[in-house]
Each structure stands twice: as C-alpha cells, then as structure tokens.
Image (cartoon, one colour):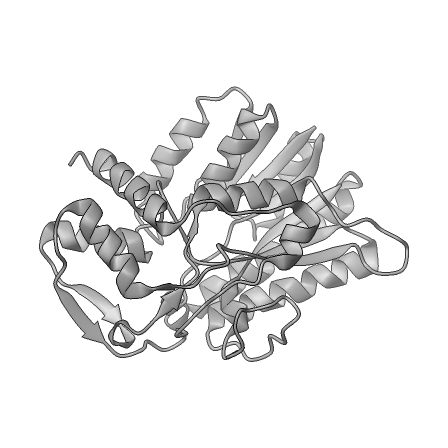
Length: 326
C-alpha cells in the first residue's frame, strides 16, 4: 500500500519521505513548490527523493480540489495520509493572512475529504503547531490545556485544523492524529527559521536580530527525532471503539526548553565566529517560551527524543557549510 505525503519538498516532509522510503514504503509526494522561501532548496530536496523508485511526485496545491481528486484517481492504493503541507511562519501571517486560510484550512479540508471518500484510509496524520498554545502561561504546554487564546493568524488556522479533524473523526469515524510541532531544526531546514537565519548572517558578518532582548526560550527539536515521532504515530492510529471518535492530538518536541542565547552560542561555536547582536523587542504574534509536555506521545507511541542541541546544532552547521560550499 501507499503513503501520501503532502508538503513533500518541505523540511519535515522531505525527511519524512526519506524515512518511509528507507523502510520500503511506496510514497506519493505532493507539493506546490510555492515561493515562500527559495524554491531551489525545495527542488534540491525533491531531486534527492526522486532518485528512489518508490517515490512518485505530483506538483499540486492541496486546496485545489480537482488536482487532488486527480491524484487520488491515479493512486488508488493510498491507505495512509501525512498532511504536512501548510503555510508556515507566524510573522508572515500578519501580512498575508489569506495564504494561511487557503493552505491550512481549505487545504486541510480538501485532504480530509479525499481521505474520507477513499474508503481505504487507515490513518490521517496532520501537522499542527505549538503556536496554538498562544497566550498560555502554564509550562510545560500540555495537550490537555485550553487553547482558545491564539495570538497569531497562523496559530488560529492551525487550531481550526485540529477542530475540523476532530469533526471528521466524530462524524465519519476517520482515524486522525494531529501533531503539535515544537521548533524544528536540522539539516535541510527552512531558510526563514532561526538556526538558518543566524548561521547565514554570522558568516556574512551581518548582525542577527535577537528578539525580546534575548530573553526567550524554545523547545528546539532535531529533525530526526521529529520524523521518528511522525512515523511512530502513523503506525499507531487510534482504535475506534464506536463511542469516542478515533482522534488523537500530541505534542512532539524535545521536552526541554533552551535559552535562545545558549542556542546562538552553539551556532557561534560550530561556525568558529562570533555574532553581532541587534537586540529587538518582542514581535507581534510571538511568545516568550515554549516547552512541550510529551507524556502522551511517549505513552502511546514510545516517542523518546535523543538529540540535544549540543549535538543537533553542529550537525546542522556541518550540512549548512556543505550545502553552501563553504
């Protein structure tokens, strides 16, 4: 049978496809290769995936119902879905909110409908975000916490996706699992994320923007650990007892909140070059600290992240230098 992975040319999608292919799965990858960041990086990831005969690529926008119906007609053996396609970025959602409702709400709805009407879907796994915790102050963030105070459009669309997925599990008994990703980093990472931005600026001799004057903490999670969680969850759908909807929601993080300045210090050490800091106030839509309670995914799936930032950052910098020929 086959796994459909949307956002296949994206950071998490690329690594997830690699892991599935390595264990012998057939993978259909979907991506619209939108220019939110340098498309050449997406194309390079995609070219590597296409070297595997088990991988089939379809360029399509998941919010395009006709295009996705065509994918389904051409791949009738799809029985599992991993929906990672999304419009990412908290700050960008302040200036382009319609991009978020299209990808994160309408796109998810199209995929849920595709899975529902296929008659073969064993599990529908989708990307949510730690941003849904919004103005919550209780730490660590637990999936049992209320999440009705989003502070960005991005977070609001991700929460809407969780609610829609619950409805599909309730109404149509579709097994769905949402994954609230905490700050993901590592090789092949997105250029708009902290590790990449900092490394690029430091090597160019440019100042790095450090928000909230450096007083921030993040649950930085290495990509290999994230993918282990995604695949582990895929293999363990909620059982349908005919009463409760077959629906789950998990935090997927490192279960450790790191100081931003420590994170930057590791990048400086790995590069062998000090940064010039430009301290800035907190940005609209941002939060001071994230910290994942991962007890639920540990209990149900055996998820156990193993990569501290002292290991993950040097690995990222090694890839960064190789990719940019430095």
